[in-house]
Length: 328
Image (spheres, rainbow, N blue to C red):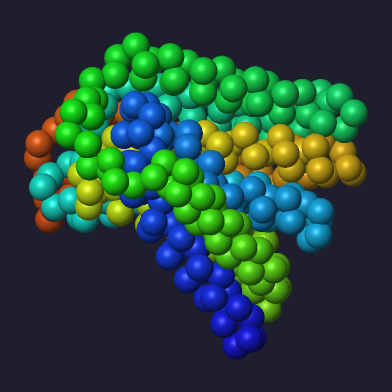
């Protein structure tokens, strides 16, 4: 058992170190290209930070043949990503971070809610509608995600307020930045392999079950890139990039369910999922709605460096975690 935990820790450390570097590369790319930091975080960094979820979704289906582990990791990562916002409040230390961000990020949050709702409907419907053993709602999720990316890009271009008059990275090569970004994504991918290879064994040896391990334990570790990337962004004052990375990663996480559905050849993946995932998914929707309210209301009030929106996030996260544990 000790060997398993050592292997797990090595993968986690690799993910942490690589994830922390991503925020700087995102800032350089934003300055070099003129693309808004919110969109860079929501799409560009989200792809890199979601690599562990992608690999674990694929390996959980192909190697372990466990739809519950794959989808549990997806929904669990979503609620943990949103819990990171409360951590960012403490890191910033100057009141609610959500009042500092671009209102356009509500678009990413709204699309995330739509995607989660479609996934919940898929679990409720099960195998009622499928094409070549792929659930019809998987196609709807992919279509909605692509439309969401398009809408986000057009909105950010139309309402871009950022100006890069003071060039901070003129001395840094754009080509070198891209190569270093790709190196970090490779490290995150490699680290996720270590993590995925130990998750099943941890689930069986601890007796916690695949749904619980996937929804909470494994999800927390695969969200380490988002945690480190957003902490780095906040320390650099890049609040839009930080929150954009979280919301964009959540959108992409939901889009991983169709990937699992395609790979799972026994039938539509929705027909083989535990109903417990609905609880985690609903918690994700509720947490996202709290984020939307926080961005719109822009409260200045805080308690122990936490905004009231962050406190609400913590309460919902702890409550949903406890309920998933009881239902495991």
